[in-house]
Amino acid sequence: MELRDDLIILLLGGHETTSMSITWALYWIHRLPQVYDKLMAELDTLGDNPDSSAITKLPYLNAVCHETLRIYPPTILGAYRIAQEPIEIMGYHFEPGTYILPCIYLTHRQEDLYPEPSHFRPERFLGRQFSVYEFVAFGGGSRRCIGYALSLFEMKLILATILTNLKLALPDNRVIKPVRSAFTVAPSPMYMIPT
Ligand code: HEM
Image 1 (cartoon, protein in one colour):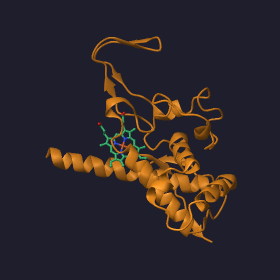
Image 2 (spheres, protein in one colour; image 1 turned 180 degrees about the vertical axis):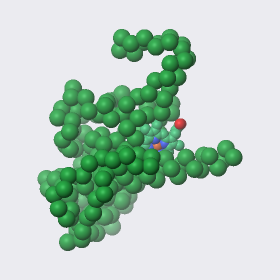
Image 3 (cartoon, rainbow, N blue to C red; image 1 turned 90 degrees about the horizontal axis):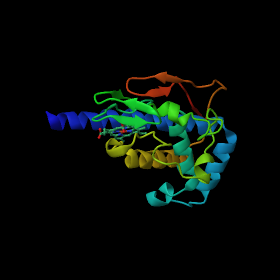
Image 4 (cartoon, helix red, strand yellow; image 1 turned 120 degrees about the vertical axis):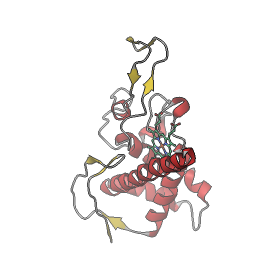
């Protein structure tokens, strides 16, 4: 039974989060021509049949993936923690037994960390390294997402493969909004067409 539960959580936690992140990334890349151009120029430096490690090391692709996960984190809340002893966090006192639920979305919208937070701007991730308390799309601490490295790897390989093999476009200027999906916050219905 425990093995079954572990397999189900890997499937649920690993599938929708990553696929929605790739969908969001495709949206932003095609909505913002300057992002598309910069990314394509970087992918062009790889030459034919690049190996996967070369793709994962591309700085701008890495920044696009992180900005995608920052602006609309697929899971807006982390898993709750229960205080085991009295603790104080930023002047707030919590008694043992208090449930504490970190909000990933609000952390990623803090102006002091991410100026103009509603703007998709991958360059933020080129200029500086964010700490584990600032970029929290995968949660934090000892229960941080077990699949974080795998999902970034998947995102980068899938985006690079799609972008170098297909020319896609958004059919109109509709703004895509986040909506509640089964497990995540996903893009509202979105279509892309080959050009
Ligand atoms: C973009 C993709 C993903 C995002 C945004 C994401 C996000 C998260 C978050 C926020 C947590 C809670 C962490 C915490 O409370 O500190 C979590 C936990 C978890 N994730 Fe992910 N995840 C992603 C991909 C994956 C993948 C690919 C897998 C597995 C193959 C996976 C498996 C898990 C598991 C098993 C946990 C529970 C870990 C624990 O409780 O110790 N996730 N994830």
